[in-house]
Length: 304
Picture 1 (cartoon, rainbow, N blue to C red):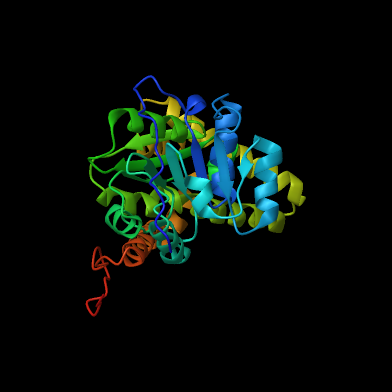
Picture 2: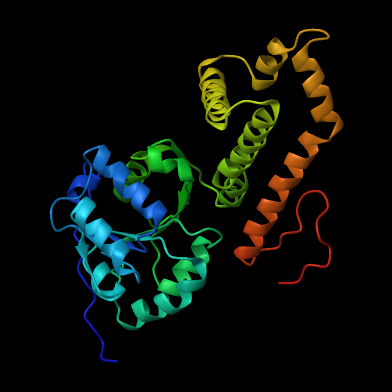
């Protein structure tokens, strides 16, 4: 393949925002949609012609064109050229082939920052596969779809302060963001907040189904549970007390809550939840080809 001149990307400043940078999105899935919709809701979409998208599925590209005014590309190489920020939102197993194509075409500028939302792919692996040094790795979660997400992220030392500012603004557009200096926390966040909504949904599902078993119409049981979970979360956020204290405040001696909590604790609910999070954490490490021998009940026979 003939060599192609490396694209030129303008230098960002600490005054730059997502509204005046060029953003390329590789992988137009639900999370990428949530992030882009957040920027739209916050009036932070890139200016016309500066939001670019590529996905194997044409219907997803059309959605981004119609909903966000994105420029649609038929290949990733053209999508990333001249982009200030390249958001990698593909499935991890698709990265090797994509990275090879981008490397051979010299499509990525050394001045671009690559923002990854791929689970388990380390900064080192991404930098090596793409032959870049400016990489930011993030772990968002699905409530981003309603601008209630929480994202932990970090970046390599080569990412400039201006690029950090832009990446942070992108991640705040659909919820809250937490920056950490050490990448090891990303795999922990995968287990706690990345997979966390599914644990909450499982609890909600069990409560709803039991309410129906009591005799509630399903719509009534759903309304009771949805608002209970939302109200409890908001109450905890606004309170100065710990969740342990808030839980204790509800427990009357010999009452209904005490009876329920006794049964839940007897069934090892707390330990089961902890074991589930440890399992998710170990799996995240495995996906990143790291040693998952951490925590209780770890597999001593692991070999990379």
